[in-house]
Image (cartoon, rainbow, N blue to C red; front, side, top):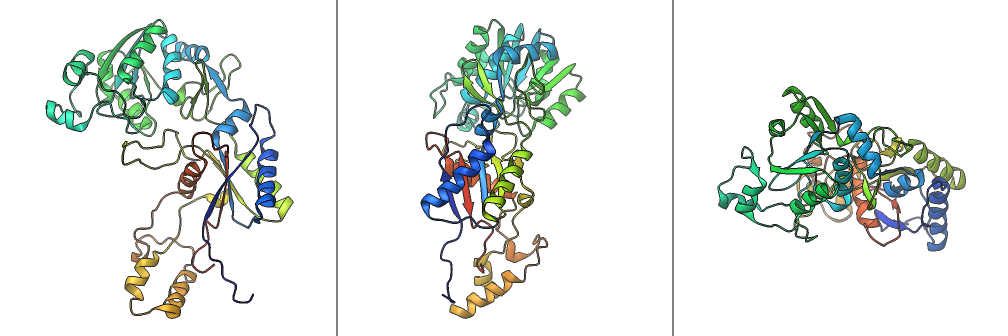
Length: 400
């Protein structure tokens, strides 16, 4: 077997696990599930394999939940219980509706300011074509609910069939608060209505807070400032608050996992003891990719990966094979071409390839964002029952 050559590159496998409950020993369950899968399916773990765990089972094992009443108590304590501006939320029953119920229960009136034509992650309230036809400038124009309906009527979400404007409005009223809905894209517009604000944007939240504070807002909380400490014995997330939360029941959200670096290190250690192999381990939520059909950007979590082992820090350091084949070695073919490309790859010294033409077109994204996206697509968001994903050969290249 001296001339043995591997014929397979990266492999991503969904690993079936038992249903996880609060208090379960997740490190033991994940390790055992991966080792059993390897034994049953006849593959071996290797150094630098990546074991990825969905954030949902980590949060579930931690018991990291909060109720609508917990959220309401926190909102009332932090924003005073009067009129609260709720700006730039995403349009989602799973991601925001339960949070909005909690906010509404902690306020007398909610001024709900929606960005348009779509929310931050691409859910559309109205099409750009309709905006163009109406002669509206979304950057500067502020629309009342009446004006929005007059111009655009009822707009149901393409995938869910929900008119989110009506849905969110009714939800606030059902919780006993008054509601006023406006459409605007400039954060400081909300100050015409109230100076106590919860900004619900995810990736632009720091900028929004800065703009509002500079414009004289009295209280500005991001979703990351709500439920960032326990309320009446609830769960919490010190770093992200309500960001990254998901609907659990009609009255409860499952929060993003709390600190879990110790979990990934524990699994890494257990695998090393059981197999002698040094694997990398990460926790992942949403992948970071965009759907060209629905225009939805997947990433509604604050980060793709809240915890990972140190071998997953940084970005890929890759050369573009087709660039080398078409340019540097265009006169070679067969074994000579293979050897020339292999030598170029082996000559990489681990330093950055920024500015090197042979690296152009290789995506300069964080390893955890790339691997997390692969794992999110592998595990799916429904009933596959594989909340752990094993990725093998990710760090291989043409020479391995």
